[in-house]
Structures are given as structure tokens and as C-alpha cells.
Length: 355
Image (cartoon, rainbow, N blue to C red):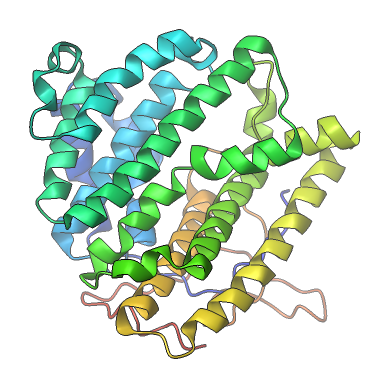
């Protein structure tokens, strides 16, 4: 059983999760990214619930955009990463990413790119980027694009490691894992979803620090929960925090998972300390952004406990500070971490930050 990870935030989910899931699967089928016969299996992963937990405060239109984006990203992950043919072929992966980069750079004209016209992934990405540019300011879209470029670069880094059978150092892994998670692109969507643009505050050093910490937490919780699946895969280089810790520190798998969990919980303490600093005298836009970061972290964790994608036994819960799950930490009694979410039809994105 994976160790307990500290997530002291409330569990929330958008009320339109199921509808967004159905529409996302239909969209993937229409875009020729998912065979109709695979639709039922794709549903079991609960990707729509994933988006609905990470953006419970979004309006229904934006939730659908995020849900479609997440579905597309998981298709990218399965087609281009890990054990796919491109996953250990940097040159081949670069060719696959070229039309996607063209779309990202200029959604209005990129589908004239010869590869984009024949690549369903690129055509679907053009649809997504066009929908986002219709909603986001140019600055907001540029931040999203920067996050996605970082993700593409990190995929190439992983492919290079697999091709050369290189286990990255712990420092290098931590640096790049924040990008392979796609967290920075997801964070760039928060103030689009809230309708409260952060403006220049997005680039304040403390905001950049808390964004990095959030990316670390999302990444490391993923690594802890999915490590059993990663270890069972056939590729020679395992890109996970427990894997690199085991390799470089000569730890057993159990010790490596425990050490990864310890580092995760230390990072959460850093997050909470910095969040408290930023929350003092926060503008409504900043308060909404901080709440959005909480939702990204808690939403992923709650989804990861429920999806069969990681095929792990759900861990127990740590006590929640704001209505999250938990038991009596001092007595060592913990409740099973099955999220008790709230799903209001209208959510104030700043309402739960105090506390």
C-alpha cells in the first residue's frame, strides 16, 4: 500500500463532470484519436472527473475545454511517451512534436502546416488552442503556451534518457519532472477559469516559487502512487522520484517510496508556509489563484486514488484542515481516503482559501 501523503485541502468536484466526460470521449472519437470500440475502456480512467476535480470553480464551457484538453494529453502520453515507439526515439518524437509546436505558436494559421493537415493529434490541438485563444487574453495564452513548450521539451529529455539508458540525477529529475507533469500549463489556465486575471502578479518571484512547489507536489504524488505501474513497465529507465532515489541512494523500493513521500510532505509544508504569506492582503485575483493551486493538488490526488490507471490500492488519508478527509492522527487511526467532495453549481473560487 502506498504511504499516506499530506493533502489538507477540501475535496471538490464540478457538477458537470459526467457530462463533460461523455462529450470529451465523443470529441476524441470524432477527431480520430480514439477508436469507437475503445470508448468504454477510456471512460474507466475517469479523465473527466480528473478535470472536474482540478477546476471545480470553472463554468461549464471552460470545464469542457479543460476536459477535452486532458483527454488529448492522455492520448499524447499513450502515443508518444513511455513505452510507445517514440518514447525512446528523440528524433522521431521531435518530428511528431513539430506540427504540435506549429499549432501552439499560431493556432490561427498552423493547420496549413503540411504535417498538421494529416495529423489528427495536431488537428485536435488546433481546435483546443483556438478555443482557448477565444477565451484567454494574449498574455494568458502566452503563459499556457510556455507551459506546453516546457512539457514538449521535457518529453524529449525523457526520450533521450531512454535512448541512452541514462538514469538522471535526483537534481536533474526534480528539475524536469515539474515540466513532464504539465503542471505549468495547467496553472496558466487558473486565472482564465476564474475570470480574474492575475496580470503582472503572475510573475512575482513568490508566485513563481509557489507555482514550482505546486508542480513538485503534483509530480511527486503521481510518482508515489504510480510507482508500482512504472516498475512493471518494460522500459529500462524509470522516470519516477522513487526510481531515481533508489538508483542513486541504493535504497530498496520500499525505502525509496518512503523517502519520496517524506520529501513530498516537506514540500507541502513549504507550500503552506508560502501560501500563508501570499494570502495576507491578497487581491481577489490572487486569492482565486491560490485556491486554484489547491484544487490542482487535491483534485489530482483524489482522482489518482480512484482511477484504475495507476492500479494501486488507495492509501489512507491524512487529516484535512479545511474539511478534507482524515482520522485521528495522534492515535494513528486514519479513515480510508475516499474523497467527500462538494459539487456546488456555482462556486466562488476565493471562498475556501481562508483556513
